[in-house]
Length: 377
Ligand SMILES: [Cu+2]
Image (cartoon, rainbow, N blue to C red; front, side, top):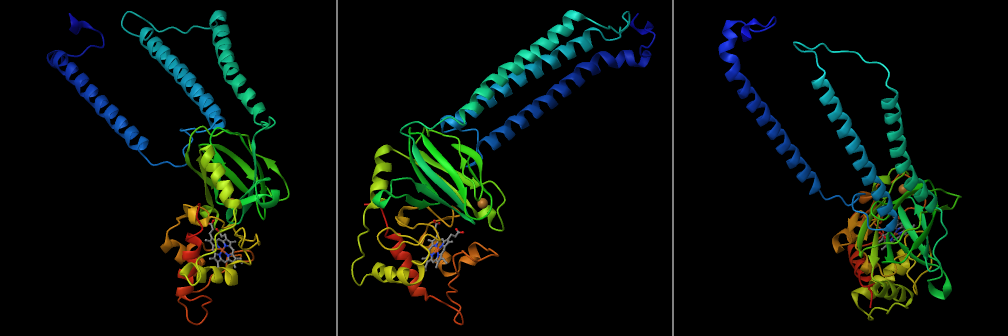
């Protein structure tokens, strides 16, 4: 009987079809299973990646807001996508042309059209409301007890100025490693010394341009967790743009206060005759014309180096601040950060090049020992 179908298979196929079909299905299912396993494995691999610039692990109220909206949109889009595809698959299957049933074209159905216009409107409004409320919130006035900081982009490093927290009520200045207390709102204004840079700490706040001759206001944010977070200049600013990073240390209130206090305290002079004492002399002779260390020097061409011994990084977040890296940096900075315009750049001291050297290796060791000794008490 089956063989009487108009398009049906011939005699030869009647024998194979009933057995071949379940086999094909099993093979397809197996292939699907492998595919699903591979997808799960890939997800696991990506999930274990070290991603210091992730936006998926918000650690402030500001990034948490973006993240919530993002997840909401993703979930809503997934549900819509699933429902649409499922409905489509069902309709394709149900109304397909088959023996005894002809596919039909239908036109016009007012109820249906109103329904599928109204539902997307509702979804879009549901997305728009929190988005607009949040965008409006980005320009809100800072809290009364907010911590005010001015961040200045330089080619190729970040300067941070805490208003009123420095010696004599002046700005307290540091560089490349911003310290803020957990749970207190931070209000940062952005400026640039030379060209356009951009301030971005994916887990905490950003990104907003730093424009020369203009003060931009960064969205206010309150860090919610103690830890170290990674920042990066996010606007191409010249040859060393990729080497312009920074870190944000979110400290406990006690640790932050201790840091501010120590930044303001006069440094203990190194013991007379020690390596560090000789390093201090090298610093005064070769470095003080650009670097401030509170109580020692006052020039602000380069990063403020007060308490430099407590910084984890060197060279705008590009290297760990180890003795070895520090020696290499002070000896021949251009090997580490090649730049074309050296007007305000740190000079290379050509250590190890007898024709042009400015410092001996011993002097480098001394100044490194001195910088490393500038620590919290
Ligand atoms: Cu930059």
